[in-house]
Amino acid sequence: MGVPYPKSQPMRMYATLWDAEDWATRGGLVKTDWTKAPFTASFRSYNANACTSSNGASTCSSSAWFSQQLDSTSQKQLKWVQKNYMIYSYCTDAKRFPQGPPAECSVTSKK
Image 1: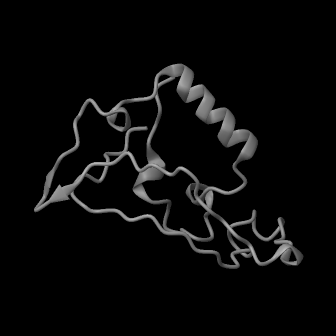
Image 2: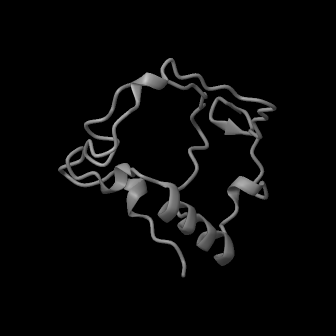
Image 3: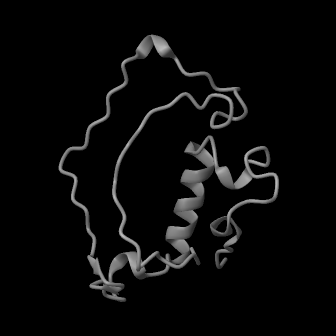
């Protein structure tokens, strides 16, 4: 989507759960149903398709799927999912970022 992939910094995957009702739920409009706690998440058949980085050198190939641009059909599908399923985007959270959104929010996609 136009933001360079962070090739020279290692990344890890972790998950956490916190009460963010005041900022991550449309300004508190969507409430967490705490009667459903404890919340459990699990990963099944998780396969990280990744490359390694050592001393600033990466093993990533520029032809890898995650280095490619989305075609117009895939961009439309992504926009549809965002419109129909995404309830929060920090890119539009003016309260959290009063000086303006982070750099990755300003990318423009080809139409």
